[in-house]
Length: 326
Image (cartoon, rainbow, N blue to C red; front, side, top):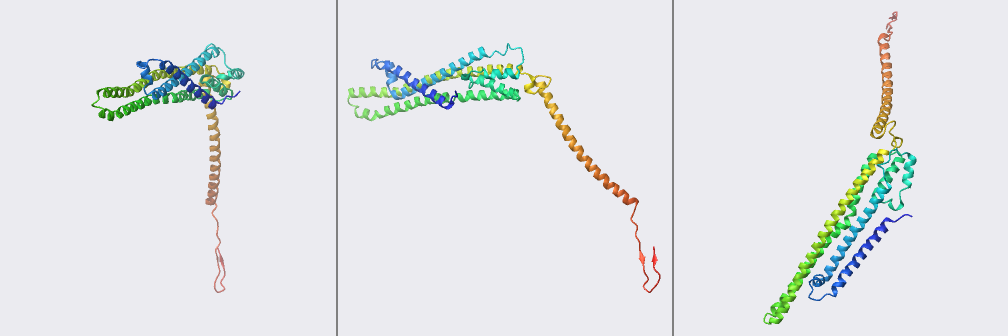
């Protein structure tokens, strides 16, 4: 059954988002039953809308990293168990390549490793150059990894932005208390209450920034670890691909009696020699026709010099004299 990759990605994104919302609710629900003077409750419930959204984005980033890491580990284990090219001591023929291509599990055909090996086997069956193709596919895999981190990079940027937004909100709430503070300057009790509210409003700015920066540090560290694991996995796939190319038999790559690059160089030399021979034959044929035409012209010129034309002049007398002929 063919899987719609776009719909699959949208579905996974929704699952991650809903999972992040669920985890945020689980975190906030126990804090609600804490006492009002609790630091932890006040930390998350002061400006709760900013803190909650920041927490949702944090859990979304964590679930994204976890899903990619688990999929990577599953693909790595499958690749190590099912593809053991290092122990293969015989050449891979066309029939073997066709069987290997059909034996790739359907659920792994769109993954980095099996897609690379499948495309190399397909190119082998169709007589294409697999060495250069492997280099292009390796660059494509690295670019795919970079593209897969676009969502994670966006989350890493949104989390601190929301923290600074909470800072602006807290400062705005604090500044709104100053007019009331000046009006109640004579009432000590009212002044004490307003100062307490002012301190609570100003603390919002520091709480949101602190939480956002803490989340960002964790996301950056884990995303760097994930990126390193993915790049290392691409290197492992490169090694598997090189072992596969080394085991390919020469008829499929058109290498002639030798294998690998030597056979490819011999094939290119033969093709270049035949092309040069054909080109030289055309040039020689053209020169031969031009020389024959030139020799014909020279022969006509030589004949004209050796046999000059003879002219006859007839003089007739004006008054009945005899004509002279020379």
